[in-house]
Length: 347
Image 1 (cartoon, rainbow, N blue to C red):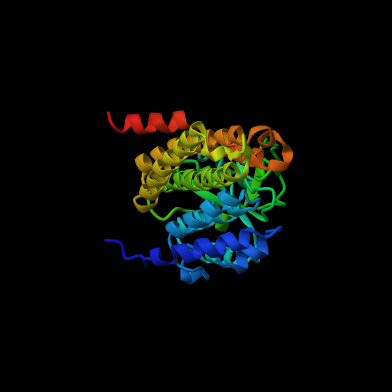
Image 2: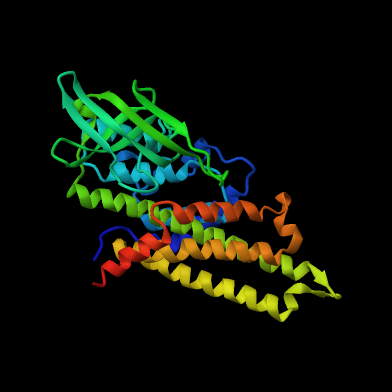
């Protein structure tokens, strides 16, 4: 049995508050901090709320439902997850406090695809140096501190705390079709680091690093669930008022069947997400990530079709959700890669 507090009775209220907040025209970082979302599952010892990833999942879903453009994935979900996974020490604790309080923005340089620790930490005659490159890193461009997953001389994974302005470190915006997210390529060319900025994981390093990748994948799956739900809701609303032949198009059998198919896909997706959030692990996360992100693309595409000609216009906004769903599908492992992961576990 887990000794973590049960916040399930607060999820509906959290969802409602999140929906109201995200309905605002402008969502800036201080607003997310003041709402308590940044430190939602950070421990109380570092100023956080001491909640669980289940509460973070609620926020991620609502962000997807609103197609909100925020730095929450990189600056909160991944950064706080990384800080939580480290052995406590004075410098780590100070950064955690600063991130939760909103005084400092941090990002985990975890690539959106490929090797989870693409950097190397070498000890040279000039001191400790970091080399390597990570692509498709969420929200690195807006961060003041970067947590770089690297391997030391023994091949052990560590996290290196580097200032965004450090000499030899480059954070370059990486343009993608989805305009609601900011991704970047992080390059380290001999970045000098102090030994106090090299932090060890609390437990098996490989397991912790893998868990961070799974955390990112699951957060993206939650986001895609919100995207799909928003597309179903707006499609049902539109087909109820759009009329042809003196009747709402939602009364046509073909449209009813299409909406029913969307609902079934979302229902299965929600079950898989709930299972992965309740009992996280490689198999559960891969099943959720593979199915949900693929379903969101399908649902958004069908929503565009059911909106007719207006669905293809810039003003409808459907394209925003379709692009977001498409990017979510590829981040932290494609559906094919995650299905392969599930298949291996059945061997």
